[in-house]
Length: 194
Image (cartoon, rainbow, N blue to C red):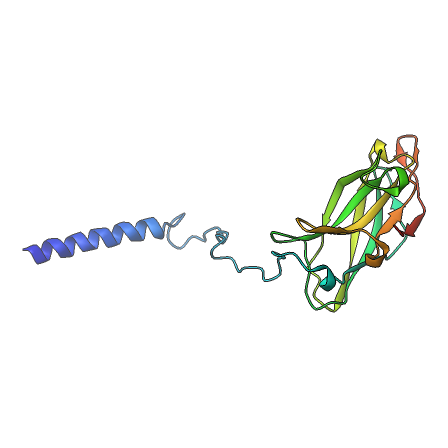
């Protein structure tokens, strides 16, 4: 008798677990909607940057891949930037300490930290760039009235570690920018030499 009770109890528990774990939508034979993978089911991206890259190993370099152009509506300045990574360690804008392209507004003395400057203006995450490769990425500098008469600097930054904002890393200065009738005008662009 006890054996029958345990068998029935085991079947009830198994059926309950199956119903909870394998709930199906719709009726049998009907296609079901795809279900997104949970984070534990998704493949882990092997490319995030989770530790500081030692300065001597950070060989990433920026350069212009085209001249900056104002957007048709004047709401932004668009430029193509080449990011070369001749080192052996890949970089990306993902992870606990990602590498991003930072846009700074330069103040007095071409200093982002000086009067009129703004170090934390815009960040653009880098795509994954393997060691020994390069990528060209679009960068958009949004319209902001604080840009009038100022330069902006495009520079690499490893979040939580440091800025790479010198000519050694190819930081790019654009401007000075001019605002014409509440729109950005075309600036000159020259590599920085801070």
